[in-house]
Length: 316
Image (cartoon, rainbow, N blue to C red; front, side, top):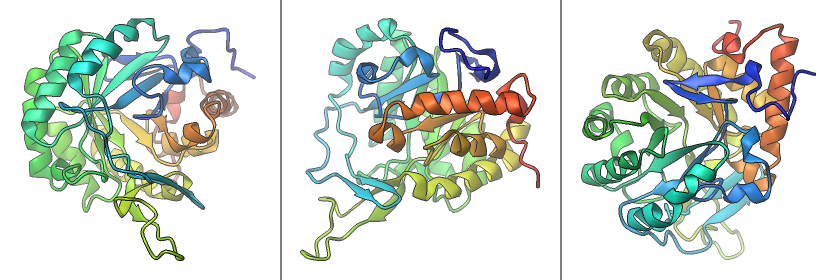
């Protein structure tokens, strides 16, 4: 077995996303670790590649009323509604903790308007504490969460404005899985300044209590995540990688239903350079470490020296 937890940077799994160097490509998706390092109570964060913060908005948000998370047979529905302390409190309370976090911290940026995204991204970039900013333009749990992922022109507009004020961090953009034309959206993102694509956010869904006849989520609908959306995301990653990202040399972070190392390996073969985990970590934080170990064994079994050799190598 190649994996050695005592080694800080296991070479076979090391990856670089548009200049952001990660010890491995396993990333805790937005919100999974709270604001910065809350997950450290459960796992050694130095053994995963990165954590992504809760999505930070300009103003504090209480989010949606309970219930706002419910399990399903193939994952979960959530309608958290981007609950967070807001930009000012995040800068004061949480950013000072980043230097002590033993892994890379990616900041997730949200907003209702272009001005919101610009203000949050600029303020976080100015701290110089984040190697990357992830623009969350695809949340299905607020009234404006998908304003800028509804068509390529809207996406391009917000990205151009954000790109103009971000000088230090690498710019990631997180897109939804149900885009009418994923390749057109990806191309618009890249042309407007996105340096890394994150594919994908949750899929809009609904659950109904058949006794009360009311929706199980207070908002009615929410974002579906977990194993049920995994094949959909594998397809989107493959299509975008093949048609757009490979030739543009823009890396993809594949996110959607990764519970095991084989799920992660599928996304790598489809074209992802790294993978994000969310629902599985909620259920069992140590699942991220099992994915790291499994990917390391897989790279060795494939007789490769680096996981990068397997990116996009599905045999069609």
